[in-house]
Length: 249
Image (cartoon, rainbow, N blue to C red; front, side, top):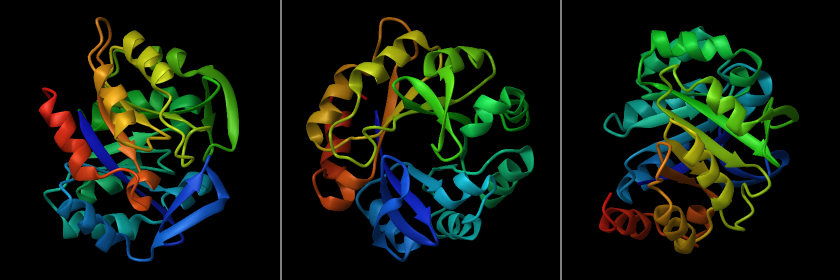
């Protein structure tokens, strides 16, 4: 299981939001490229980047910064989400050297885009399911749909999706612990590997996720994204990844 540091981009800075609210952000760095280098030094094996401005605008906004990060650390696999609503935006990031494209809002509103993207970029498409009480939110989490995360995951079971990033919005940025129950529930019912996100606060959360990583049914949990916990020091990346490695992954 991978422990994946998050870099959330807002107005060119590295920030963390609380529960997805743009007005409730904490700036951790005004140099996202250097911050990416810090996580590389700490042993990161993948980086999760979100273009927050792009998520609300519906089109990539911080693409130049993402391109700079990929150029600076070409050996670091990167997954990017936020504002990717068409194949052209996905192509832009693929051309820049990004390894995985996360489609969130468009997965709800235009499921055919996910299928087309999987055909165009095989093995590189991740679906982002961001949920409130199990219902998927869109438009930078501003709107909540009537579609459940499990229902949406089932739609893409045979599309060739590489993974699902599942975020419990109520936990995101709050350091209250990951919603292990909901994440495991999705992993058990999905044939697509799941990456946990939202609320990871300490090593105990990684331990709980790791204990549930392999399910009797479904594809299981292959990673955990964490942001505020790493930036505020309640979780040590190297220690957390070492734990995951030592437990057989």
